[in-house]
Length: 540
Image 1 (cartoon, rainbow, N blue to C red):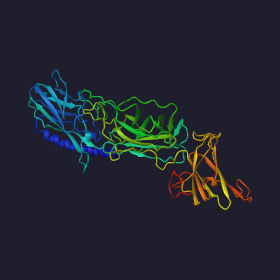
Image 2 (image 1 turned 90 degrees about the horizontal axis):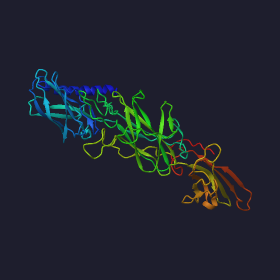
Image 3 (image 1 turned 45 degrees about the vertical axis):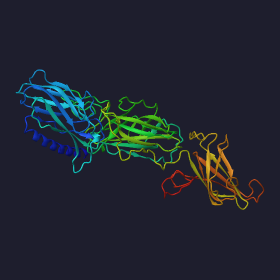
Image 4 (image 1 turned 60 degrees about the vertical axis):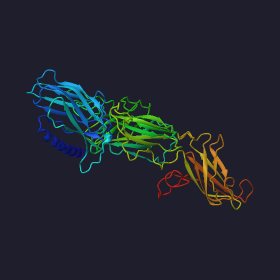
């Protein structure tokens, strides 16, 4: 479907070019530059269409100065624009001339035109790049912004319709999306994994998609000799275009808090509808580089759809970092989507990871640019800020919430309670937080004479259990209590007696505290909120 839409767009553009060509046919030299290419609206170094005109035996020989004026800022490298003159059967041709960029024009001085009037000559001009991001793109009723070139020939009388359309500016990439995934009930206390699975591992994702108007946004480095389907572009009459330093790249910016480790796939593949493995992009060492990063040894992922690959481990420091994916292969006839899964492990104590994405390399302030390709701004200019990479409703790391349904320190009774950190055991569930000193539990009391400030209890050094009494932390209280502990696998026990720590009537009762599963309640004190309206199914 996207291919069909693109075909309609190109057909409409061909009609527009045809109008200019019909006008040119009333002169002696005939322009035949074909259908202009689509230029990406984010592009700073977009290669415009080749200009070609044929003068069939109408001009006496001479030396001309030829100027190409362009309606957008020129960003070609100093040696990139070129002009060729060809004439059948004439010695010394084809001849090639280098252009000089002067403002928004390229000047070719001292172009020698052939004297053979029988065969005439053909002029071709290429290697002209423009900053398409400066051209407004608000297509209305199928009318798109265009980039024009005007040809001026001095010293020699060459009759020519001077106006050429050399590109149509259309939105390149669709708005990129960053999808937050809930951390669910997974423990973020686990150590760095040696094997990750998309089907069961917590992750966020980034999607980058080509515009439906242009299926040739993501391009390899090239050059490709017969088309514009690479960043280096095509060539004319065997004269190579200036080579790009890289393919199209995706800059993935990450802000990763300390204590969290993120894992990025080294290789990603694109899809188009039901088609998979359409294109390939590889994580590289920096912007404009084609050198692939070395994956972290032993780290791989796989999913139920059959995708698999190596991972790069990125340790969070709280500072923003950027990684780059370089497009290696693509399909210019299919609208491609890249899905970038992002994995993570670690303890979330100072916020959640966030991300942004842009076409890259991102242009600097200098003009002309020294890098090909370059792009301006984010793919999603309406949302330039970093977006959450993991859901804000994700559970706090290493946390357990316990419910003690009845606690009292009234009518001569007192309640003692114990909370155990049971994560150190032979089943392999040991985490780095619960050891000789597991952590702290904050106590929330609800009922008669509840304290206005939630007290807390902590384990003594060398112990994996926390012990206290209601009389010690909430004197005179009667009601229920929730304990929010900053470690996983917490379990509690309460004992109510009228003779606690002294003689009594011999009345006593004990029970095991309930564990509140993450996501079954919303709001304090169950800080890791989930969705409301879910049934509460508690265990011990």
